[in-house]
Length: 79
Image 1 (cartoon, rainbow, N blue to C red):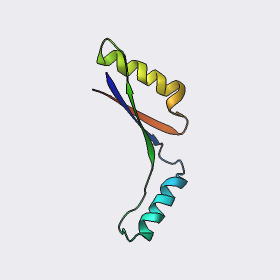
Image 2 (image 1 turned 180 degrees about the vertical axis):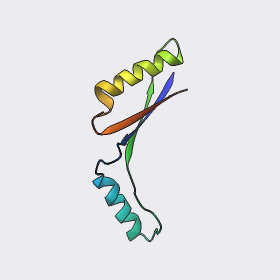
Image 3 (image 1 turned 90 degrees about the vertical axis):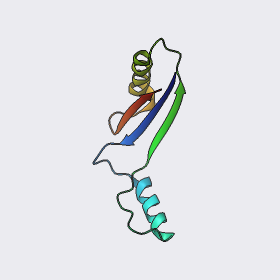
Image 4 (image 1 turned 135 degrees about the vertical axis):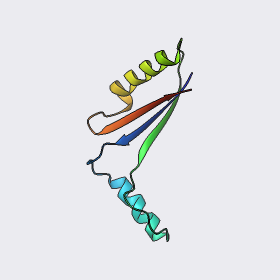
């Protein structure tokens, strides 16, 4: 099964890379863009008996390795 993980910084966590992107966009003439936040996207093929099993396994991976749960949120989508 295909699983997708979207990882973003929690609200209130400073995002210097997002600020750099925001500044670069402004420098390129893109106006009206504010509060840029960057994140990560991870796609996995998971051998699982069901979508629920795949989701549980990927969430465990996120808790143990893929996400820093102190400063990041994650969302898992299973196809």
